[in-house]
Image (cartoon, rainbow, N blue to C red; front, side, top):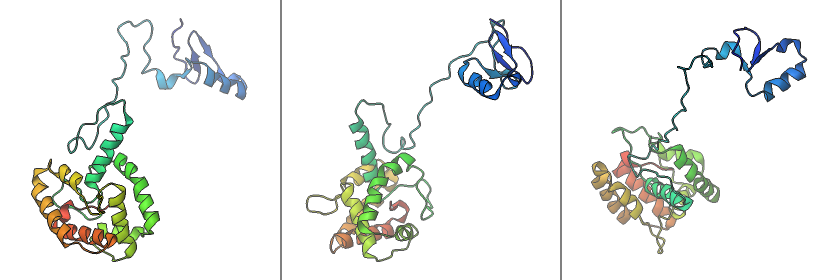
Length: 233
């Protein structure tokens, strides 16, 4: 087996040197894509182990570790042969975060996406969010307004909030709000548990009206009582 020759401006194939500049363009391109050991000398001299040097060797790279940003909050995601279990886990997190979200910083800037809401969670919720936007006709500016502390009293926005509840299973058989999933989530966060439970209890009693009005008034009530734990998807 031949060694790599330190010839600048040429290409090397194991065992022989090929002057690619002297060959037609089409033939050179064919050679570049079909010879497995083809490389350019200036880019590889520092990384190639020569056969004559038995002390140098390459080790396989370790497998990358997938870091789940929600590990510290919900549970560690493990490999499973069942996609159904993974889907249930993703939706259980979204159910908990649908109305209120715990945020690391004591002072939260309105409209800022919580750091633990991963891209995967946003992607999982996207189909439901888009469906509710289409169904209710809510304006995106109204959703953004709520995130920034303003509460437009449009019918579309009110029904959008109820649509999210309904699509994510937060409505019971009586079509009333059921927040067991959210309460279970906040049981793991002692710093906010009492505050969240109090806000939910008070707002469920205050909210009245039809489904859309009920969802809107509950969201607004909760945001006023616990603004640091509120976030609307």
